[in-house]
Amino acid sequence: MADIAFLALAVITIGSAIAALEMRSLIYGSIALMGSLGGIAGFFLLLDAPFVALFQLAVYVGSIAVLILFTVMLVKRELIFNKIEDKRRKFAGIGLMLLIMVSLGAVFIDSGIKTITTDEPPVDFRDIGTDFVTYYWPALILMGLILASTVTGALVLARRVDVEDGQRTN
Amino acid sequence: MANELIDFTLVSIALLGIGIYGLAVKRNFIRMLFAIEIIINAANLNLVAFGRFIPHSGGQTLALFSIAIAAAEVAVGLSLIIVAYRMYQNIDIADFRSLKG
Image 1 (tube, chains in turn brown, blue):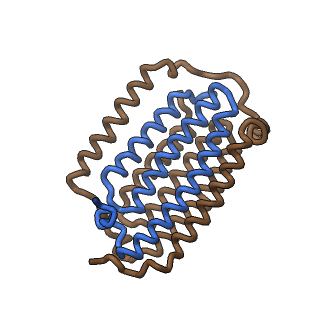
Image 2: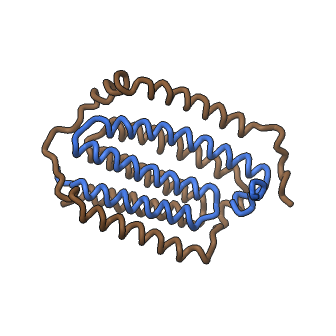
Image 3: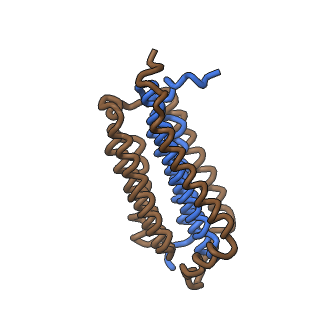
């Protein structure tokens, strides 16, 4: 049975995920997204994974959320407060969401993972470091190269000078 | 440990459903990026939860890889938003028509 901290974190995470998508202002939406990502970091702490939790806080709450906030501020004021969505699709989307939740939830509740419990000690975070430099070292190097190239690509893309403002407004 | 694997899995399924709802309904480019972030986080939560209950360090290692790749994805996505906004002066994806066949 879940404890109080788990239930509180679940309410925070799911509630602020809904708020991130449904709030009228994009700025408040991105702050709510920050709350949702922080809630996931709390789940990682509950799962005895403090290293991943701190990584999540540093990368998601610390940098990605701030990056999104700055991008939102670059956009025109009326676009920030304007909700753009298909009204007809809204009910279909809610139906799709409920269908996915109910069907996947039923499958998982019926499956054998309901009985899985563990009394074993959590994984030591030193094992993660060992994993990175032994079995996963080619992936680690590849990830570094991918990160460097994507960030450079993003900078080049954002600084393109051949795109003129309002080039395709008509 | 009081919490069971099924609890974390159900939270993850709920986040996946919310993310798919956002991708299906919203036409705002930035909100769709929010929805993608929520789906990626649901996947990370599952990775770490299964890694805790097996227990094996592979779950946390893969979650760290996933977080790093997601950071790169967000950087590219936001720069695409900036380029598209400069071209169209809008963030409604229905207005981005130059790739439409």
